[in-house]
Length: 384
Image 1 (cartoon, rainbow, N blue to C red):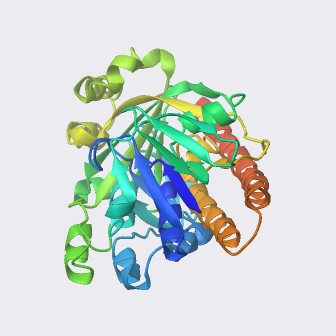
Image 2 (tube, one colour; image 1 turned 30 degrees about the horizontal axis):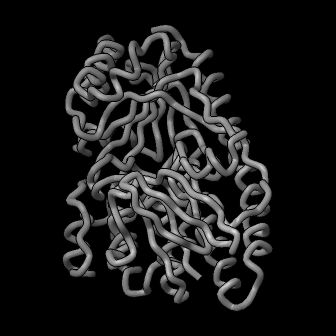
């Protein structure tokens, strides 16, 4: 059995690692030309089940390194106004263990070079009479597989062909996201697990990514064959802005300098420490983008093509998608291993899809309720 995974994100790599360990032939095909081509995101919090699934796809020898590059938070959250006046305390929400997406992706790539090809943009696929799938790439090349897994994100090319009824919609707000080095000044803005700055037009969410050890240094000592980025601890900030206040979002997405200028204009009367977040922001890793969310995905007629992660359940931002992707990889890896041992392929894939769609629908419902609570908080924000 040969499995082709389209997309080298966290979920696709986690699945590929599981299949390699199970002795199943697998290839990962990524449209980007290299791992550093495109920014890969910020911190995520992995709950116990997702972290267990992550650990299950890594060799035991990398467990100490995974421990070292995680992060912890303690204490309650708080809500403040734009002058940092305390509005109230928010009970601590257990986000699990914190990881940086980019660092984690490098760890999942370690040792997988022979299975991964960059610069392979999917052009399309077709199912053949013998049950296999022919995959076509933008460079004109083709490849045959017994199973194709679309792990190619919210804008999934695979999903658009497999389940064309699912729509991804632009939300009624714009997201500004970035990071600023975690100096003592900025660490003081988040004394607990999170701080929300509440204003009538915007909401700014602050959270720390405090690595237990600097990732590059930890890798050099604990697993010298693994090369991790030199990312240092940072404060991650997310601002939600009604679309009418953000200007031309399409232009700002491609111009971080202009995006940060817009943000500085929006907070010009805020507390100096908050303004400094945008003045000292990491320019290469900060910007403005439209926020998107997808329709719930229900089980589809099972084919030798399936979906994983945001391709399967397009989630709004917030780290939820990473948790689901690791759970998907664990479940699908188990089902494909059953096929290796003699189970029927389509029966195994149908069982995966039914269960995955079920828990994803629950999680997406929770995400929608969370966004509603953000809106209620903003409507009740005091004018400053």
